[in-house]
Image 1: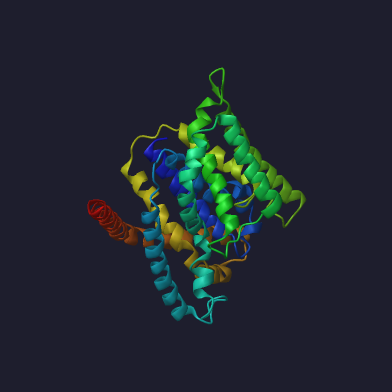
Image 2: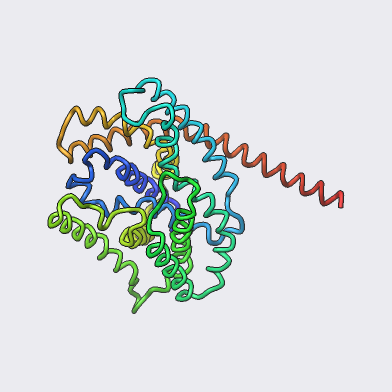
Length: 337
């Protein structure tokens, strides 16, 4: 898959992550949300697929850089939330002195903390996937998911170091790696079967979800959610469709894709503030959902533009510095021996 394809996909999926968060306050009952719920619920999973797709052939994952990224952006979130708390304490439900960091500084970071452990596990996972055939490795992935869905079934969003989350995200990582290794083999008479299935599945999932919402009002989670089986099919479909696009190298798209990282980290901190504003403006669920999503994404995008490049320089510098120190220490120890 081309770099520009991936960066465009990252940016679009980052929007779905924001929409996933801004569904609060009646958004789940809006027709816009219901119509796109299968896609909105698969955003985080697409990010995990991308990780597996590009890391399957890496000898060593960038664990140190990911850790530094988490630490630096968590510091930013703490600073932002302290300011928000000082300005809105007592005015917005949930912002109090014991919960501001726990609920608004880390809840949306469950994925990135979990990814840190997935990176660590990627070495034995990559070894296994590259040494097993297409059907046996797929069987293992499906069996692992069946175990998760049948025994565990839920993700622990308020718990960053959850075994449930690590096990599940590792399954999605394996799926992305499997696609890299074997998706080109799913052909019949020069027809890409997975591509055809993907084109059929996405609109079908949207139609089914709308139909279920009509006959069973108030329930929108049938084909929605990070751990929903249909969300995995949707994520794989989106990912595979984008892999077929022939997008020319585009600097603007590449920049937008990079901004998805700080947008992901920052967006949750502003939802309660803008929800308070939106609830006073309109009671219409569709309009409220559009307004809340637009406001949260816009402010997150602005912060991302300001923060990304200085943060990236600092993180890259520290990452390279620490690696160089480790290499020098290894050489020193080797010479001593």
